[in-house]
Image (tube, rainbow, N blue to C red; front, side):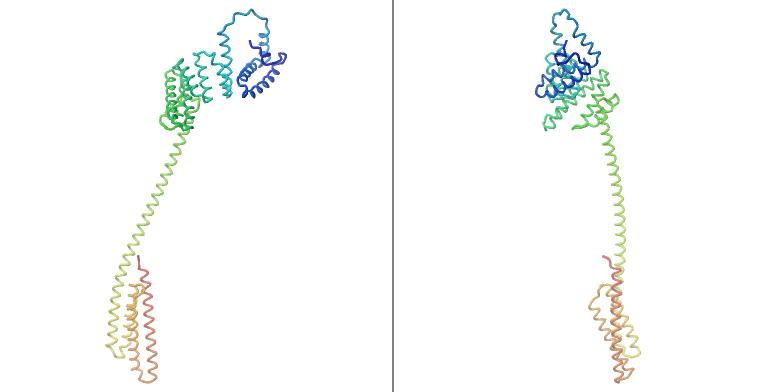
Length: 429
């Protein structure tokens, strides 16, 4: 029986509370020394952990003291197997305690002390050994331990789950290092987890099957190449059986979020396309309307052009006739009528010319001024004949000539302006 008073230098007269305070102090000291004296620290921390349980209360301390200080019994022959077993259990328990506290390096040291005395058929211990090695990054050692456990208990699903987890950790390490073996490790992890699910189903172990299905769904969903459909199937089954790891819920939550996002994106795309189609339809309608208006303007412009051509021809005919009338008819009585006809002819020709050519032609302007000058001169001469051939009549004749010429000029420019405006209103390019 271990004498904690001697091993840990404790005073047996102390109360359980005082002993607990001293044990906490010793634990802190040996925790600090773990980096420089790992083996001794592991041994001492294991003793301290056991002592804490023994001295947890006054009742447990009293029971321990009675047994420790009881009169010596006749010693029986030492049992080597019992000693080996006790040594193994001490270090196994220490390794388990360290593992539960997350002190993976200390758990590894305690494991190494337990392994020489371990039972090769103790698959539970081998499973724990695989976990400890995995957490310390020793994946090949972890695989060795878990494979030995599977040889002992080939139908136990939890052992295959552990093995798959070792492969998964190996995959992440290889993938981070860009190693080509990463894909192989992922395939092995998925296949082993699938075997775990099948074995749990055959054994009727729904809890283990739920853990395996959830972990398999996670491996299939969050790692490339992905198999979303199979991952969803395993995740739903895991959730139905009670997924204690929570992997199935993570898969289904992420899948639901992805589908919601996809539906929203599809809806937005549909709305965008509908809006675009609406805009395109409106644009086509606008273009059709513009084209219709353009065609109408072209038709109007063609009609106006034809009208301008007709007026242009009539204008020239009228001017030519006016010239004829000016030179043929000489009687003073008809001079006014001829002047009015000439003015009308000039107005029509200049209007039609600017309607047709916008800015008019120099030929038309020249012909109009020649006709105006000629008609004004002849009309003034006729007036001179009527007034009388004297100095006063001559003066009035030149005034009449100037007035008539100014009227012609005004008619020419007014007709040109009206024709230009009409041309611009009907012009369409």
